[in-house]
Image 1 (cartoon, rainbow, N blue to C red):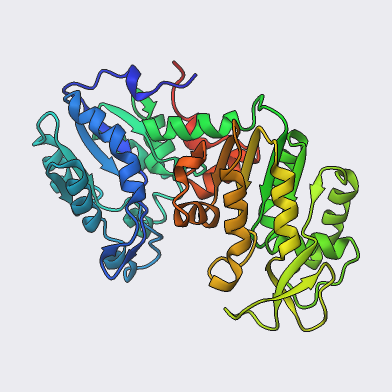
Image 2: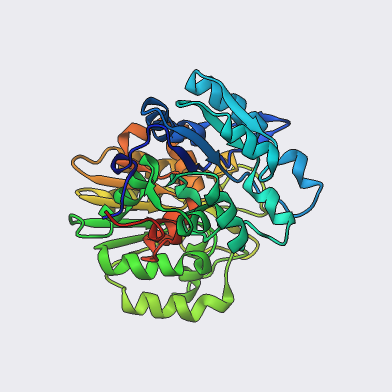
Length: 394
């Protein structure tokens, strides 16, 4: 068992917290504040216990000087202050006298957010490459460290692994603890029948998830762009649909090995080009000049039927091109089908699947809606997460 924030004495302590404030910002306005809200329980715990909360987060990628202005965390500090109902000191620096002074001036129960950790990437990728000097420096600014950034737990960066390795005491924040235990529950000793639903564009992105979950699941539903590679491997015609020809052999082997478990689409919504136009229903074999962009009516029915009676469901990835209104219905239908299951432990992860759940306002119908894209994917692959592993055991 890893240490959690509840195991720490926080009063009067300088508490470094790695949060995930990597929020979408358009023209200086935050378009989704969910990640900020998700970090509140951990921050409030520190404030209420009389600790000093020193927050670190990245925001997007910083590759050149031109990225600095649009990757500035200041709007996030303002939004956080609003949600917390108290002042948040924003320091436009990731190191140096101004930052150190601001931290030294903090009183118990105060909150400070420093500038985007990836500003340090202009300094020889110091953050992303986990520079020992940077991890040591950041660790020196606090007494204890709390990692609450599940979204970057699959990365070994200076702001998570670097600080963890250089500080006397560290622990998991509430969000990180919740994410890891919710996803682990879906992999370790889950209840059966167990259905995994995997979608998305590419087999290559998801093959490790497929390989890991197919061993646990009773049924594996495969949809989205990656389904066409599997259908072609079965000898079906797929028109101009997305396909990874260099993965056909892999898909064929997978199907041969797990034929009794795999469920693929039996019809499609197709169009002649990759555009948001009304789709045409095609049977399993797609004609030349047409591409599959979503599930057809029979597939939606089949997938919903396969889910009936499931006690554990893990869903990652869309069933069609969800950014087009004409081709998002398959994904929404899967979402509705899962939401109707009774006494079922259901977990959803991955940007597009989570967006579908949110669009339908069905978050409360799922046991767990994951905030971490890549991190939840790696956990479902059975991979250990460096950001999690670097935390001390109880």
